[in-house]
Image (cartoon, rainbow, N blue to C red; front, side, top):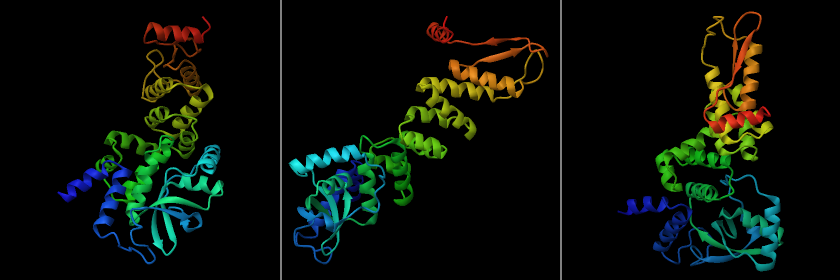
Length: 306
């Protein structure tokens, strides 16, 4: 029964992890020291700790902090104080290690605050990692690459299967798989996701393109032409269709590179498959632009300034 309760608690995220830890520390006695120098009753309570005694979490998966947002939070803390305590573990006499709340800690330093309120918890290295990762995953402003990297670290460093990870972060397996697949994209595209140049929807479309050079081509098209997710999906589908072996029914051979490039450029412009139907060796032929509906036809006509 205890194991079942533990598993259920982990599925609720960071709060459940901390609550479980509080229960464990309480059950061992309120006067438990844990490490040398810990005052009786300090574990599981809120304490005011000097910032200079707090080291950052070495397991912190988050690397980017918005400087403007930090300054705004710093000004709020300077005027109102830190309302939400950070969470730390004690690692020695007057030595603490951050579990969660690095943004609040950084902002407090900017505000020249000397000591801040903190929950003191007991946690081993794996629990530290899990707590830090889960806290960051649950942030609304975390970019998709940071989430994917956090998922990957939890799987590799905490020895979790995708199903177990899903329980801890309250996400289904397919969602976790989609995030992990982002890490297979070229670094420049991952940077584009991180920096907000393209969305998660764009990235999922790019994953379906097998070759790296084609992924980079579509990525640049999305940025240069401001393609929506649907337009990117259409462009990817067109590229996939064009890469399949095909025969020109009239000439009996595939288009040469120059014609293929024209097809690619036109497909990108119209966000739909475009075919050059070459009828003879003199270059006579026709351009075929299929459409899927009246709305799609109207869209193409607008691009043609019809």
